[in-house]
Length: 119
Image (cartoon, rainbow, N blue to C red):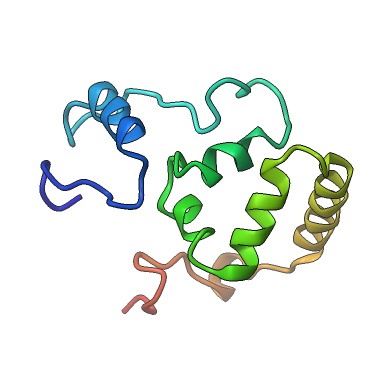
């Protein structure tokens, strides 16, 4: 947020108020907020239920609802009826990420702004 009174219009209003009550200051970098309240200790599909209700903690969560393909994926898994499919997709994605060969050391860089090469 650029202004403390800014609110994200994509978030469900009651969830936004709850977040604002927990994080009263933009300078607070010690307060922890659960990404998946209610099932943060388990690995399940409840995250999709929250995102589908516009209760995602991160901007990237809300962005899932802006694309028809990813919105349909979220809504499908929010039902809880496709857990085996989700776990299979998750396993496949972990294998793909494990096979990625990121640049390391002087071969690459961590961008300060992801859309711009560091100078």
